Image 1 (cartoon, rainbow over the protein chains, first blue to last red):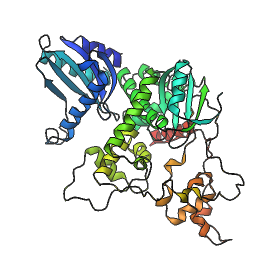
Image 2 (cartoon, rainbow over the protein chains, first blue to last red; image 1 turned 180 degrees about the horizontal axis):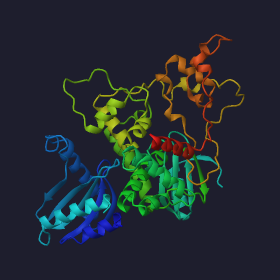
Image 3 (spheres, rainbow over the protein chains, first blue to last red; image 1 turned 90 degrees about the vertical axis):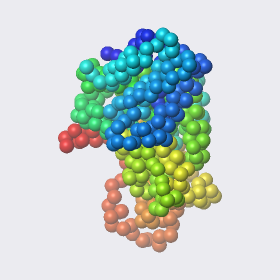
Length: 127
Length: 336
């Protein structure tokens, strides 16, 4: 049975992954973390992650153009890495996002996105 | 057993955690709550202002009422309810952990954010949910503080968190934008429901509810609670209810805690004084009325209560086992 820790362990097996966390984006709180974080500070990274998700969700029109067209993931590319944010859709009330930090050279964006989708789904759906 | 005393709940939690104790930290006051500690680590927290795991799972439709009820029936005595739901295949381990983590931090905010409250540590008490997660107590305390600051950055008015919510009848601008969560709150706010009521009704986290309310207050979309009724002198001049000769002890009585028992329901869920229609203050003889303004004093001596109020059932006893009531409610829902 994959729990939260197992999910993060799996996220770290994504090629190029240097850090991963699950973040509550209403409060900007890292519910669970593993590996490295930008500036070695998971809490600051989570707070920043939350702001990015909220901006995409409510301060832009990307998400609200079509009814039920929900945000799935966000990719932020920097010179040194990829920062992937995948929404975790639980049926009960929660606002969670899976965050994985990838090394730009070792990471493969397509592979990482597919693996994160699988991980986020497995976390909350019985198979 | 440590006697009930008034202290900062967060400090007591730190001491309990340092001593690696197991038990429940009961916090009185408004809204109050309980934080369950296992060998110094936080395993669960609950508060009347924050929907618990059961409410979150059933009100969202994730679990049927009867599924939750049968897990309670089977697992309560052994404190195994959480794992049971996973073992029976109703929830994934991930869902359970995320739900418990969310509910715990949410309730911990309400239980621990008070600077001073009647607190009591009950050694050995466990929660019927069982230990699903183990959270470092210092992390919980830190997060509670951070959440307090976050709210004050949005709009520094703590009364918004507890007073009934009234949307403004005329928005302050021609064009207003609300999020889905804010819309949901505005539609359900009726001038009577407190933020805690709304959170329970909608199955939304209590803290997230307050956060949206403070944002809407900042945007001028909800009425600000009247400051007149705050800790002004009027509040202090309150006469004691009839029949009480000594000053009324407003600290919650110590309740013998069996596993899973919540603290006594505080009066925070009743509409506060300033929103009461005058007739409702006739309930002044109930123990929950100690913090109401003395409206009834204007009644003529010997006047009778209106019939519909006189036949009201007596107030719920303070020590009522809330878990039992919740189980009955869930069972009734399952019958529908």
